[in-house]
Length: 352
Image 1 (cartoon, rainbow, N blue to C red):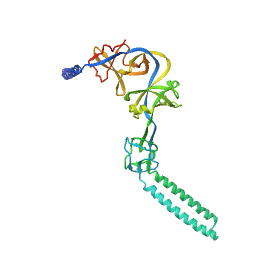
Image 2 (tube, rainbow, N blue to C red):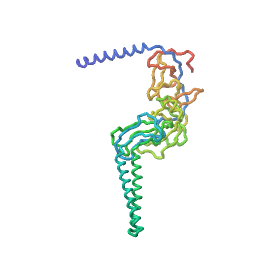
Image 3 (spheres, rainbow, N blue to C red):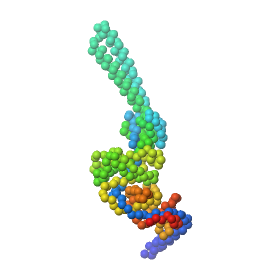
């Protein structure tokens, strides 16, 4: 027991010092002026959020068509390439040798055919032997065509214009059909891919618009369902859906492939009572959203889960599913706030 108390005492001292330093840091924060918006009650469609990911409509994993050593990679990750541009060079020694062999075989077959044709005119050869040699010439020509095609496969070119998003291969690796050399994405057309639970499939069909939020880009938009799988995955009990977003969003908000997205699916039930906060009060926090509540003259940070966006008296309001309640007062500032920071509110800003 004595040893336990001896070990516990330094820990208590360290904890007390840590709390004291935190209180000192809070006291040292400058006072920030802020507007106040009350979190209000309202009605919202009965909805459910599901997760999705941003991805390009056109994308490809570029793989070789033959097995050969990689001798050069002509592009870099993030590079914009044009259709037909050289991406990767493979060792061409084997298909080049096959082409030379086929050309020699064709030359020999043509000489044999010419000789037998002359002998046939002198009745020293049979029509069957001439026909067989003519077939041998055609076979040699086919082998030359095949060899040229395989030789062309040693130069891997872009099937469309796009951006190189990843290069998993290295010079010196053995390229194998089916194993990607690089990933290519066409970024002018983006979509949201999401797995829709089977319980919501009745509400999701082609052409339906659904609210989409991309937190890291701070973007709220409407996605249009362009495709939904007719089959449900028995393991996850979901069906894959794709929602189109306009190219302007990608350019303006700097949306990247793989970004996290939240999709709100209206379940078609009667509207339910909920809490709403002004969209201006939301502040991104990684892939989450947060708001600051006025609490005893200071800013209190809250992580919130959001729902539908609605228009209330001409102002964009966002449904709060968890993290704050109606009646609390949200803070709106032009700059950043810190948890515990003292706040001076504008007297004219509060609205009931």
